[in-house]
Length: 406
Image 1 (cartoon, rainbow, N blue to C red):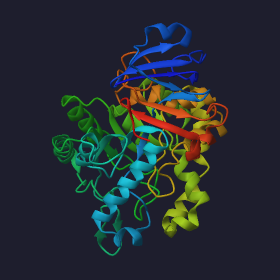
Image 2: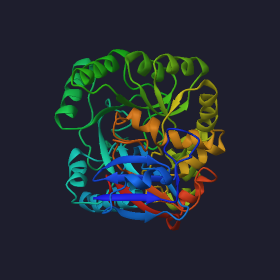
Image 3: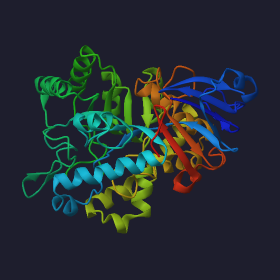
């Protein structure tokens, strides 16, 4: 399989100059990138030639925080949805996400490794998946305990997540790795969309977090993921060795400095608060979620602006967990720019930096020879306005490992 793309604008996510206009792939990898006038002579006669007609060619976009099997966070809807139906809706969510140019997704709760394998085997059409096995304490965010006396496993494919104490989380971490998850994720604080926790209340002790990180690293998994809205729990995460901080709704200046010291990544998930505000009626959110959302909805944007000032590493993630967000993942890029990030830096957060966080930078994140041919062809310059990535009509083609998937 040989494909030669020419007469376009190639944004490689390596250099901000964007001076290339052609790219050549063989099988699943990029072989050449450069100027057509220099590459033409190197292209085999049997290669398929694809005229971009002035369109833009980007690396496949990377979503670092989504819940692909979740189509609603409304409790009544979840209780009335068979798990099997949830899986089929999840397939639709994955197709919608891939169609809009996101070729890699880290699922932060919901998909078990079998969903990843189904994508890899071609049984379902979706982005490349990395899965997270969750640990939460008794009464923690992922247990979702209701006063009636019942707990709800909110992520369809990620159940039995409750582990307590140093000995308990040792077993939990080893169990999650044994089950085949790509990352271990903890709920370091409470959350917004559960009835029993507070967003800034710590859930695991420093000793528990250190043990989780220790066991994860022993098994070759250097990055542990933390749902963490901020506060003292963030200090525990950073001092305990966690480097993937999800949400970070409120981060003090002191802890911003500690994130830099510990080389931690911040995944701001601005989109979830945006969609909760814009679509709260359609989402039919419960009263406890709305109350916590009202208290915190402006904090994330303020924290993001200060993170830019400090130079904290930022990777793109949306917390997509409902039918309105899957496929609209690029809204995060729009919100990043609205809150002060330069457009090129926002693109880097969804490509190069994201690939580094997911430990895939040798394969993905930039358009360079030797890397996998994950490509998106777009009508119009997304760096002028990321909103064009929200309109399916502007996404002209999506390639994953050299194969056109949309």
